[in-house]
Image (cartoon, rainbow, N blue to C red; front, side, top):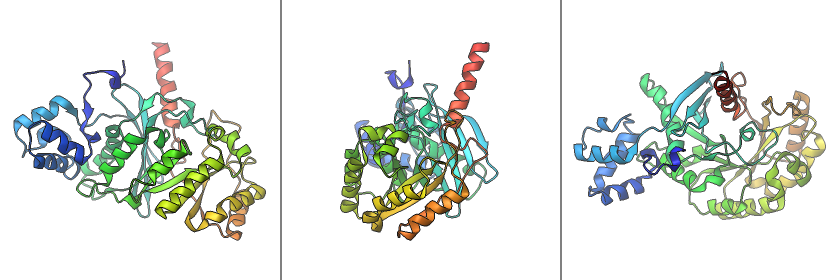
Length: 367
C-alpha cells in the first residue's frame, strides 16, 4: 500500500503554508506565535529535526512528532556535471522516485522541481512521460526538494542559497494545482525561504486552459512558461498528445486572458527537433503566431537532449538553429537560445529516474 493511502501516514510539515501552520497550532491549543517559531526553525534556521527547536515546549515538540515528519525524501543518487549542474534522484515514502536538478547560473542557484511521479501528458520527445503518472507529489514533498538541495550548502558552511526556482521537472504542474499553489506560497513567504516571485517560473503544456485563467487571479508575480514546441495544430498534435483536446486556439485564448489580466510576459518553450519543427517555414509560422502577442512574449529555443527510448528524434544542427533564430529576430520576436546544463549526466528530465527503475527491476529479477 502506498504511503499516501495509509490512514496513519504522517504528512511532511513542509506541506503547511504559514497560515495553515497557524491554524494547526490554534486547533492544538497553542498560541499563534508558536507557529511563527516553528516556521522560523524550519526555513530560517533550517533544522533537520523537531528536537532542535529549542525554544518550544516538550509538549509541543511531541505534538509535532505525533502528526508530522519533517523530510519525506531519501537521497538515492546524485550526479554532478562538469558545468556544476547537480541532478538528484529522491525516493518518496511509498518507494516512488522523483528527480530534482540544481543549476548554477550567472544570477544564482536555480532548482528545477518535480510535481508528479511520472507524467500522463504524452509528449513524444520527453523522457518524463515514458513512465506514466503514479500520483501527484505533495506540497511537502515539493518543498523538501528545495530543502535538501539547500542542506548541501548549509552542511558545508557555504554562504550560498537557492535563489531561483523553475517548476519544470517530471509531471504537469497544473494537473497538481493545489499542491503547486501551496508550494509556491511556502517558498515565496517573506518570513521563510523568501524566494522572490519573479525568480520563480511555472511551466505548463497547456493542460486544462481553465487553470491558466485561474492562475491569472492568484495575485502572484510568478512567471508563466508554455511548452509550445510547434506553431500549428497538426505538428503540435504529432508531438504532444494534449493538443488533441486542447488545441492551439483554446490554449492561446487562455494565454491571452492571462496576459490581459496580469500584464505579465509569457515565455514560450520550443525544443528544437531536427527535421521536425526546425525549418525556416515553421519558424515563420511561429513568428506569425507570436507577433500579435510579442509585447508580452519571449521565445526560448531549447537544444534537444536525446532520449534512448525516442530514437526518431535528433538535436537540430547548429545551422538549423541559427536560421530559425534569425527568422524570428527578423520578425521582431523576442527570443534566446537556452544555455545547456548537465548534458553529461542524463540531462533529459526523467532519464535518471527511468534508468534507475530499470536497474532496480533487473536486480529484482536476478535476485
